[in-house]
Picture 1 (cartoon, rainbow, N blue to C red):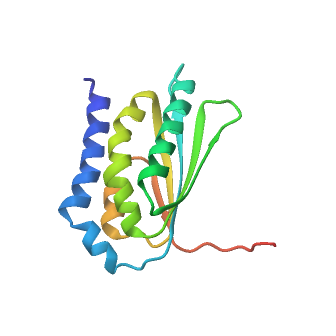
Picture 2 (cartoon, rainbow, N blue to C red):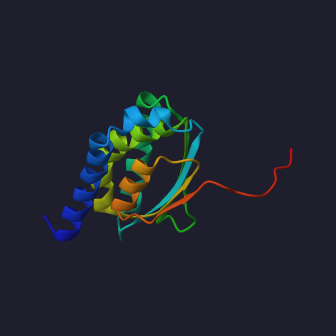
Length: 153
């Protein structure tokens, strides 16, 4: 196992450990229960574009079947076909913690073998424990609670 692979597996394990050690799933219920949006990018390593898309399509099936707190999941492939952009909307911090402990922790090492992560942009009132875990993974995490603009209907 090379050093980069070890670091990525360690980061994934750190994330699951931080959530478990801090008792995040129990303390998160006390946090504000607003929805949290996450948009992120994976860039395929050379020659791994098709494998990345296939892997994320399979992950989407796992998410749909096993994460009821994940309210929305969308995936888009860049024009060049070398990047995927994922949008996820979680019911609350508990749903995000469940995702990070489960599906994300399980697939992050595998996907890291075929693609480079980042940035990961979180929008909403993300609990401090989850922010710390995301920063610890060194995936270019960006957090924002306030957005301005308008919406036409």
